Length: 113
Length: 114
Image (cartoon, rainbow over all chains, first blue to last red; front, side):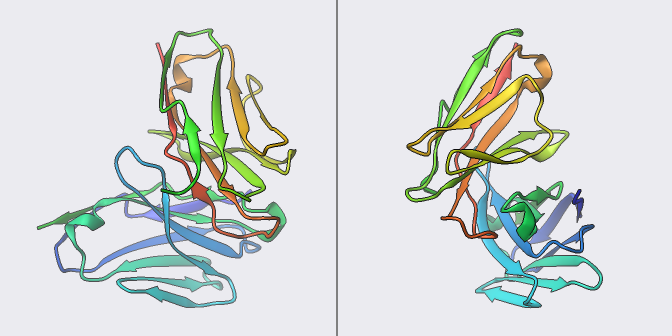
């Protein structure tokens, strides 16, 4: 089955700096890659996603890139703010498996003011 | 608010007992997914239902079962509970039949087995 690796497991950045989280996946048939943000005591919240026919997607301060050949995708957060502090999860799924998501292990991001 | 409702929010029970977790998906969503989140295992897919039928199964224990009812709400039943079953259980729902659509998560049920 699919395996998703996520790095780093923790990330501490200064407010205003950029944060980058990287994920690799094993199943070349995976074609949907969402990113979720989980705040303490809450469920994961979708922040951005990308499909395999697109190499990059941006939404304000958040961007995701996908390299299908290398089977890796990354989340970029620019101009970080204290409210960006949370645990971020990448995930992958493939059409034949419906929307069953395989998650990475998570990255705890701390933005220091 | 994701529109996915899970009850109860917290549950404390003893080993050997049985509990039922409930999930109401977003209005119109036909797919319901259950995930388990524990400290050492991250978010693990348990099972998926689509319009009342089981569609995909993950590493769900035989002691666990689920169903989706005609009104599309779903229940996850956990029996013969063990200390290691303590975790957050999340329900997610997604759209009407299309694959690879956004999955929206509920706030979770925190299960503590003592």
